[in-house]
Length: 205
Image (tube, rainbow, N blue to C red):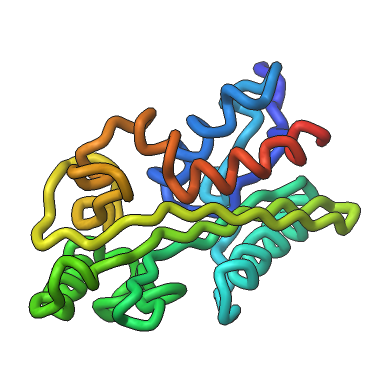
């Protein structure tokens, strides 16, 4: 009978894309860790809590605290979204729900493009924001933030990434985030920056 493998850390997410992306960011920074050391909430059957915070940090902490309490293991979580300057920072924490149903990526980005159809290029500034957190059973909580500045394209392009990546052009580039390789995106992304900052705290576990 194979031994039971207990993970060292749980990622409080049911999004497989996010889990893979976060592991790709963390793996080079965590010496001696293996993929089995990072489980997801979905792997362990932990339900998603109600995200009732009003900031990215509050929602990330809600998720990590819930998973930490349910599993007795250290937990990491993130909350992220797209903030558009001319829309006063919207869709913000409502990014995944912008078209009315959670995770409807195609509908979300099509709605956003329609809302910005008459906005000239010089006013299409935007940023992806990610807040990554670590919560431990001892009650320690660490919060780190990452940003990726850029602008909203006029039409979707690229097949990589997820969410609003096909309509977001990172600052200094002429292609969307969905046209970058995973390695290129992780090197500059909001999530890459937030979890890179958090890696030093995770390494102390």
